[in-house]
Image (cartoon, rainbow, N blue to C red; front, top):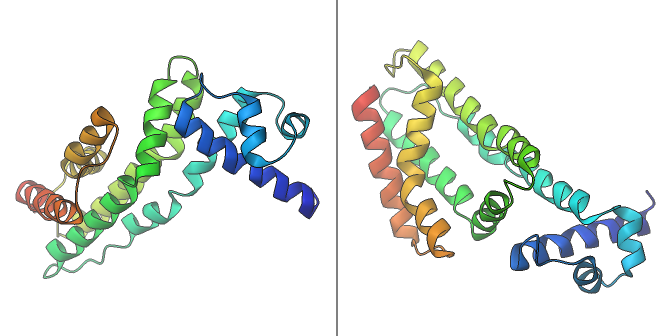
Length: 202
């Protein structure tokens, strides 16, 4: 793909992402995308044969952006004295990454279309959230092997940790359609969730 074609391809992806998030899958037309991308509808079809394929590419492309968050999960030092501080810092970073408005919007979009595109939803979950949980489980297992945590099932522990952090802000955003939490709220969720987790596993 030459540079001019690559720029158009990216412009179409950016425009499609914006329109899908704003109007939903059913409410989006290829005309809408072409107009926002400042290209012809024929150009959109040249790059993407139909709306479903364009939607799938946008959804799956977002899993690559989770790599930074997943890398964070592996970066917890085996330091007994600083364990609570280190896990709280990890918790706060995860909350920041997973409660961004665009992440919440995408999550709502995928869930809204899960019946129509079950394979796409499954692939996004496996490449995104499930992969992150597996990385976190590996970290918890490493800390358990070092004697810092007491864990029977590392993957279950990773789910518990994530749930303690995300239950309030994500559910609130999913049901109300907007994020109402403040930075101070996220600080509190990170600290309280980590304390609860360590009360069970240290």
